[in-house]
Every structure is written in structure tokens, then in C-alpha cells.
Length: 294
Image (tube, rainbow, N blue to C red; front, side, top):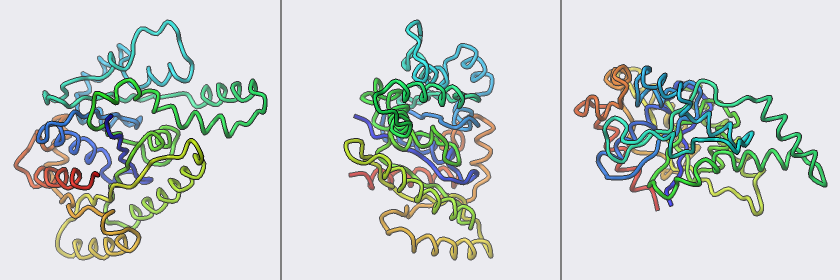
């Protein structure tokens, strides 16, 4: 059974997608792991980091995106012709072992979700919407992964900023989560808010549904230099007070324009520019990632 890992932070623009796609690529390319990238963000940044907009448009036209699978769980259709095996894009970026489950611009309809769950709550003997909702939240992403989890060493999910249904369900289905952050005050606030939300998530899924979810580590993205570097170091020291040394990655990802340039080629920096400082940092980070696992 593969390990399921969410990359998440309450704040956007902290490097979640960059971390997700480059870590996944390094695991497949340099360590021979079978890895699935799952894009849970309607901004589809992870998807467009691994395939061109033209390829995505063609894929979406055929409905081979996460949205199709979500629709089938929210409102089951016995006549559905596709399953997750049809939707996963294999051999992404021509890397053996690296697969992608593409996201979509419109992942689910909140009104339909609410209506469906209220109907479910109404037909049970003791209507309890919270219980129905918690169960749905717990199994939504889990159901999608059930039939493929045995084929992968790692399933890495790029979660949306904030704390929406898919982020919560992704966390509920995960063994670990990675917390990417920029050493900036608002990013640190996002980390603190997320930790509180995850504590509440665990509390709402106690008993037989207790979550086996643990923080694998905080990864700092873009360190800068000069005076800015000294400021970043002060912020990082504040973070070190909130986490144990084991919860902090020693490897940080430096400020490297090549990381941004790689996005223009719709491929991770570790394949587009393997000799860049950003690429070398991700390769080192991946080794540290593997060493943290039991």
C-alpha cells in the first residue's frame, strides 16, 4: 500500500505546487518510485506544471479529470464509462513511474453536495447532518484512491490554499502532510492556522474513524540573500519554536529563477534544468524526505 501525502498550507503562494511536482519527479526519476500526483486545487497549477494547456484542454474535453470522479461519488451514475484508471495520465513528462491525475477548473458543485448530504441525513433513523458530513468528508478522496493505492509507493496531493472540502478530505485520507512555507510572517500565520484546523479535524474524526495523520515536516521555499536573508533567518527561528527539530526539513529551497522558468515549459525544474541550484536542492530534499519515513 502506498503512502498518501498532502502538501498544504492555509496561505497561497508559498510553494505547494513547486514542492509537490518536484518531489514527485525526484522520487520517480532518481529513486525508482511509483508516484501519483493528484491535483486537488481548482487553479490546476500542478496539472499545468506537468502538461501543457493544450494537452489539458484536450483531456478536459474528454472529461478525463478529477471532476468526473468526484461527480460519480457525489451523485453515483451506474452508466459511467470511465474509472480512475482511464483518467490517470501515465508516464508524465516521459518519466517512468510518474503519473498524474489531472485537476479541473470546476471540481464540484457545493450546492449539490449540500443537497445530497441533507437527503442522506433525512433518511436515517436519527438525522444528524454533522455525522453524515464527517463521513462524506472522510471517504470522498479515500474512495477515489482505493482502487489504485496498491499500485503506487507514494500518492502526493497538491491541496488548495485555505481549508475547503477537498483539502479536508485529502488530509483525512493522508498518512502524512508536508507544510511548505516562505519565511514570511503571513506564511507563518498560515502554518499556525493550519495546525489548529488539523487538530479540530482529528477531533471530529475520533473513535473508530480516528485519523492516522502526522506532519512529516516544514519545508522552507526561497531563502533570498543579503539583508533579506537575515530577516528570513529571524522568521525561521520563530518557526523553530513552534515545531520539534524532526518536524523541520534541514534542506530549504533557494531563490532560483529557474524554478519559475521551468513552469513555462510545463515541466518540473528537476527535469527542465537539472543543474540549477533549485533542482539540486529538490534532489537533496527528496533524500531527506525518504530518510524521515519510518
